[in-house]
Image (cartoon, rainbow, N blue to C red; front, side, top):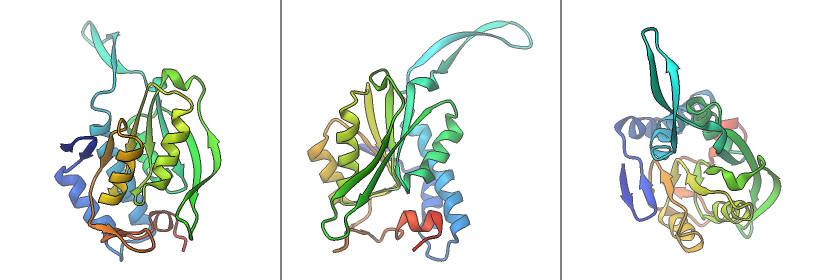
Length: 212
């Protein structure tokens, strides 16, 4: 994994391979959904590298020993609806005991500004570490709005995870929330005039759910 300031690029060969398959326009909805899930699980290993551990006493078939475990109840995955659901499933495969929050945001097609329509989080967020998931960090408007809203709840920490971003999205997040690390599998060239990442992979939500 390469790192630049708050940007963490997960450049593992398996991730790069699966991202290439994901980008191909001929990939079916089923294939796309499966690849998002697989990439999210791989990315989770790096995102959770510094998650706190605690000691537990267990019995092996031969003797008693002290092992180390994470407290999944202290970890919250927050999915930005609707496309974040694809990454959420992969993350939960790795940490099935994590709590889950949802924030509904849609992008106004004319202004590209994020508009909130749903917000539901676990209680006692001030005791929990939050990982926000969304496949794309494009204009950055949705990501910034999600972090703004989450910070009102005062969590212990916030990380932002996406599959794909671009310089404009990274700059927007760094300006608004320089304390929030960004984890991504790829940084693409630029945004087009409609706010889509180039070369990108199209609309992640449409490709995950088979809509247009």
